Image (cartoon, rainbow over all chains, first blue to last red):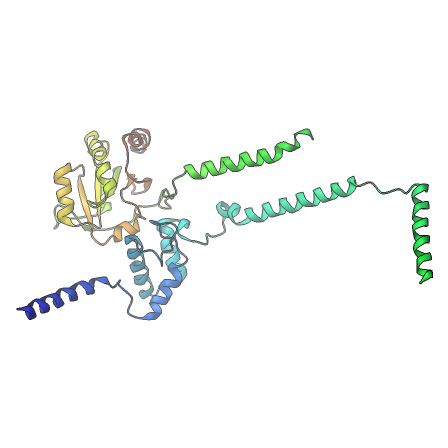
Length: 157
Length: 176
């Protein structure tokens, strides 16, 4: 009796383990390309994850879709275009450079330039604020006295 | 020159305004690139009558609404009464796209909550959904006489949205 239970248990567990594995492409090359493409894409359901890393249902489906496209012999650019057509530039972690994204790409550098310009202006103004030191006669005498005394001291040694 | 001390304050206020705008925007509302483009073609079986199929081409010549739903989606259940109202108003035919669902579950939900759809297409593997850029069910599309997507809403539609956006848009589209 025990043996029958064991056999049934084994059979049940077979069914369970068959479900776990995520569908993978047959050849590792396709899988490699899938990863390199999907790592550069945003999962739209959980937006802080890449399409490669996300376990959401949609990400699974999209990876399946990309696998099919790879098998159909589509290039990486064509696959990217496929995704952008449906979900917009938002899926790309590296948005393309075009008028609407100019601010995004150039903005930080513009702010840096403004900062540098501000710094230069500030430093120049500060320089001009410091008056050129003009020595009075009394100052000159003091200096002569100090220089003289140090020379005297040198002479002693 | 007196007002110089105000500069950091002004910069701070500008920063706060930007952050406030950023916080109040819903990051899940991604503008769809499909607006203004032809609705992707498909032909898949219907939910109720499995031997019949549905294709958007059959809706050419009229303004219609495509609503992506599923029995497993909680927000769809929330949205359902609004769809029933929409169907009652008879402004435009409402077609459902049952997304990655089980037939019996979907039919049970419609039986329980009422069926606002003229018919529902049954997208078992979610391929049609992908072509429509679906990523958060429910989603609603308004498609014009020429088969061009004119409007898309992600998330449950509300009575306010119907009155403020969808109904005016449909009556405008019907005129042209």
